[in-house]
Image 1 (spheres, helix red, strand yellow):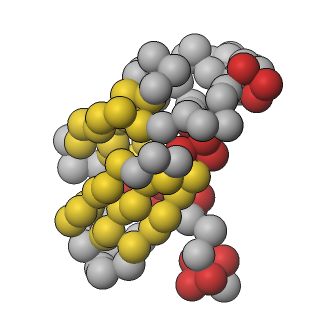
Image 2 (spheres, rainbow, N blue to C red):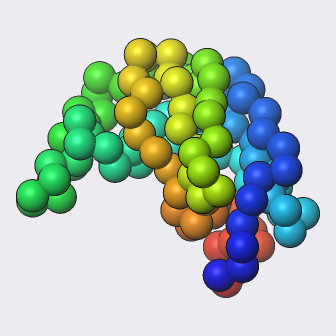
Length: 104
């Protein structure tokens, strides 16, 4: 996979828009990204079992802020107070639901 980096990010009310250095823009549902958190609070480190109860994650969840982690990932501060998840760029791109990404 190419050397991914983010050139622009917009934290919208219910979505996150990320423009990558290759010019591609991914638009994600904030809730979908939150539900895909792989931190130790959200996924059992031994069994890899998902610990998130989807019914406790609001449909109107949004990202309040973000931090770029090194040159490989992003961390979000969610409106539900969660902030420990780190999302590698390649993982985010795999979650992209656009027609271009779904046809690869």
